[in-house]
Amino acid sequence: MLEQKKGDNGEAIAKSMLKMAELKVPVIAIVIGEGSSGGALAISLGNKIFMLENAVYSILSPEGYASILWKDASKAKEAAEKMKITAKDLYDLKIIDKIIKEPEGDFDKLANNIKKEIINSIKELKKLSPKEIVEQRYNKYRQMGEYKKLDFKEKK
Image (tube, rainbow, N blue to C red):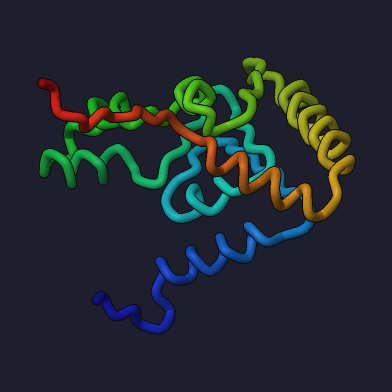
């Protein structure tokens, strides 16, 4: 069994996630640039998770993935494609709830797009009781991703 040292980042992330899962208030997360590492894992517990359309979100950088998988960080582009870290990929996998459009060069419009999503989410989530907020977060987290059922029955 692995021994965890005091101050271990993995333990801190796990404890934070446990506390966040138990929050009786809504959690809305917005990835605005690069959401990565343990922080990406932690915000995956949001009741609502949004991403700007040009943001990326992953628990590991493409360079880190390439280094682990192929022992070659220069294959980061290939790794990024396999990792599915774009807003569209993550929306399709039901990891995020919505992609927020980024009007080119118009920060005020972008800020208004973000504000609109936050306000709409608060209106929706405030209809839920504290217990329902926790249940919604739990159910959302359990339904993330894509799973394939394997048939292990022997063919005759």
